[in-house]
Image (cartoon, rainbow, N blue to C red; front, side, top):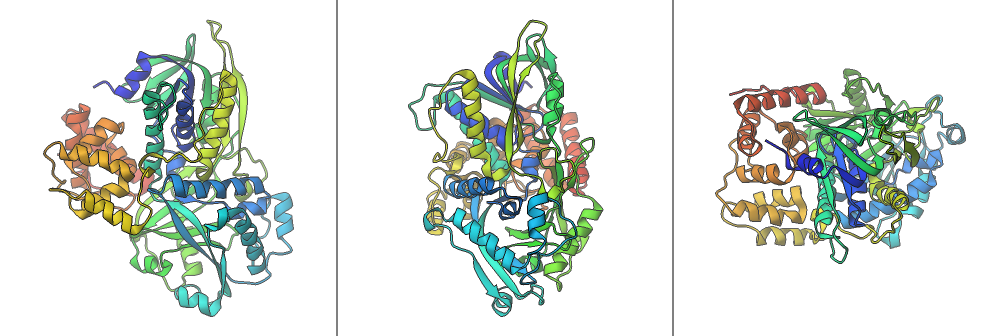
Amino acid sequence: MPRAAAAALRQRPRAQVLVIGGGINGVGTFRDLALQGVDVALVERGDYCQGASGASSHMIHGGIRYLENGEFRLVQESVVERNRLLRIAPHYVKPLQTTIPIFSTFSGILSAPGRFLTHKQGKPKERGAFLIKLGLSIYDFFSRDGGSVPRHQFRGRDKALAELPRLHPGIKYTATYFDASVHNPERLTLDVLQDGEKAGLTGNLQGGLSAGTARASNYVSLVSMDDDGVRLRDELTGEEFSFAADVIVNTTGAWVDLTNAAMGSPSRFMGGTKGSHVVLDHPELLEACNGREIFFEHTDGRIVLVYPMGDRVLVGTTDVDADMAEDAVCTEEEIDYFFDLVGHVFPSIHVQRDQIVYSFSGVRPLPRHDATQPGFVSRDYRIERSERPASAGGSTGVVLSLVGGKWTTFRALAEHLSNDVLAELGMERRLSTAKLAIGGGAGFPETEEGIQEWIKRHIAPGLDAERVAGLLTRYGTRAEEVISYLNAGTDRLLHSTHELSVRELAFMAAHEQIGHLVDVLIRRTSLAFRGLVTGELLNEVAEELAGHLGWDQETRQAEVRHAVEVLERLHGVKVPSLVA
């Protein structure tokens, strides 16, 4: 069955701008350019938010540890963007109370200047209360935002243990401050993408701009250059076609150099590091966190975290040089590291491997860093400009490659990158996205009372309060569109889960570019993340999607096997396929 998204690219094989890479930075740039009325296309070789964007620590933060690198500009931009995302994407970005356990007072004072100047760790030396107090005071200065973000607070040992009694009894202090978390990074990415597509059809989201054209497709890769521009391949059908653009924006993250090489412009910009995480079903650890992220320095000097996400606990992260020839997966050694770090702050809590319900790993899009220790590599970004070699037909073009970038700053980064694109096209910016609500964040209730009222208004036959609440969590206020779709026909919940219905799967198939069964489990829902995938669920979802996506029985069975293989190999989840 032809895919509408890929077909739109083949039918109009030219755009002013082609964005390559469907992580959050590429999708953010796509949205921004569409809002300026630019004719823009985007391709992603896998699913949206499948790479590093989907393997993050789920944090929207200012990066307090970047102060030690001297990256004051990045920290200031990050906290400004964190505060903005709390306002424009409140359906997915939530305040996160963060506590740092501290075991000494003055430790690290002598070694800190050396780390600041050389960006090398040397022998690990714990950061004590004095250094952390200094860093948080600077962080407060950047974070105040008119007083809406609370200042940090220090607690002595007795008060700290009264608040968090399972913490290591040897702590001397705790420091608590606020950042933010994004519990659904994949769906936020999809919201940003759909904003761009909508802008391409109707002008900007507020009306008043001339309509542009914005089209995007997942499972389309760039394979080479040809006489007409670049050669693209539909990864689901194998079909190849040419596509031409005046400007190509390379936002493929850690694969930037490989993408440039495919376009005949080899580069050596990237030097990514791998970060892994595990998700635990561990009620005791969940209770010990008391709703807070525990953010601390492990014995090797690496900054790590433990924090609750719903009824699960996320533990991470590692920071090791990545081998781009291999898939990024969480190793047994990393799991041992995670268990050790939990014991470092919660010594009375023990974690077993059978409590891991999901693991994930991604390669951070960091610049080449040579002798610099991975933890000290800059998290800032830069944009590299080059000219694409002339094709046999004499066609040339500009390539803008994004080096670096982090989740928190994606909106500002996209605006910066779009400004460079607009300059190349001789166009001017028409609209800033700084105050523009993202997707289902528009009109999202500001209080818990408002959320409950929204839920009550949308209860209907077949949609009880729990189901409506789940839809609001998944889609934000775009849930109204989904609810209308559900109410327009006969619907029923799946037998294998009460979190999905047959018509909601139909909605996803029609509106959310489902390429594989596993897309639903990992990126359109959080079922895999929470360890809720069963063989029955795989078969039932595959059966319901088959009619909408044109899968015959053989394809349906292949999709189940593919999902089982991806979940086991990349995420450590063992699911019996139960192929029917």
